[in-house]
Length: 464
Image (cartoon, rainbow, N blue to C red; front, side, top):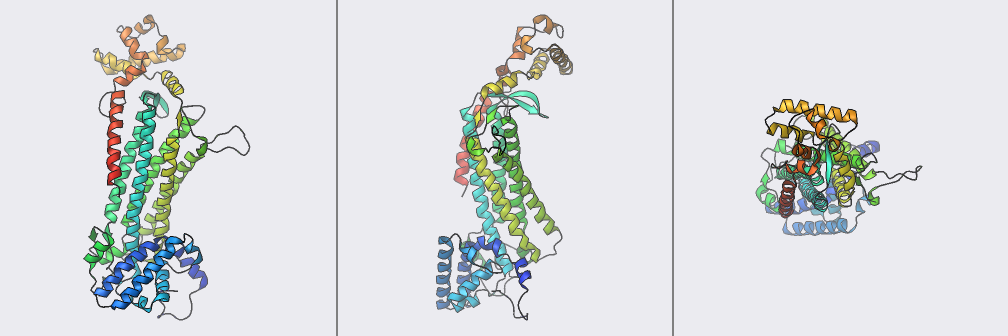
């Protein structure tokens, strides 16, 4: 069962066949292969290669084959071939001798490039839907806990107070960029290589423009040598997956930390946690740890394909057989992480009291005190030093800002008064002052949620 052989004598070494076959990977392209064959049969008929009866017999055989693979999810486990293209042609030959003409004017090189582009377009569309689902889960979580305050961190040290929704919306921003990258990937993959032959183009007068329209591509490839070996669209799709997986990994890390006993800000649902085989009390965030871990797997797949491509001469080389295993795994892994993360976020419970307690304990209004002094005419550099000294004093005396007396405050600045004391002790006041576009004030965050909900509705409409 092979598409070549006249030049060769004897059978292929069985170990080499096992080593070289790709059917175990590319069989998932079967419906794309059948779809392209349907369109190509019509072109061969128009070019005078097929008779009308041969066209009919091939279309009938292709329909029968499509029904078989669509109704039997385990069909591939029963089959073996060098690759999916060989298997399809072999099965068609069992139905009609006209299948012997099907390969006229084309190569596996332009065929596989076409199938891969079709797969990437569909995969990008599906991933966009999953991104929107996760964004919706984040927005729902933000709306349920709109007033919760927690410490924001830099260097994993408490820095300034933020709203819980502001934290969630930060990941929505990353996901918006991911959605656009996936859309761009689909657009760049939307180019038909079919008609490029092995590398030099086709001699048979098929109508590439008609083929383009039939297969739903936006444009035709312009150079047959490039078209058969171009895998940029795969690399871009895998990069989009790698960066998306990186964002999911960062989100997982945040939630793992926030769910630890030391933080206690959130609790995962039991459905997305596991226990210990030894310690009965343990509740482990394995769903998030796996998401974090699989980001490295996706990044490795991207790096592996780039390494494969970097040393290849122009046109097709068998090294490119490695592309689909890398692509499929990167996309499947990222899609799985997206699905699980959306469910984790949707079932997450927060401990608002614990969040606020942490925000109140870390001198998180120090910047606001310095800025208030600056509003009163004190140079900010001087105000910064003054408040730094005040914090050092509180740490030494084991006091919070709320426990400072007026006399203690005036030791550091003669401007200390009731208003400055309120600035030092009111998280709500600190949040209200962050009222520029993109800030964490309640009004800004509320507007951001409203805007993102509207945008999500548009994204759902524009995702095929």
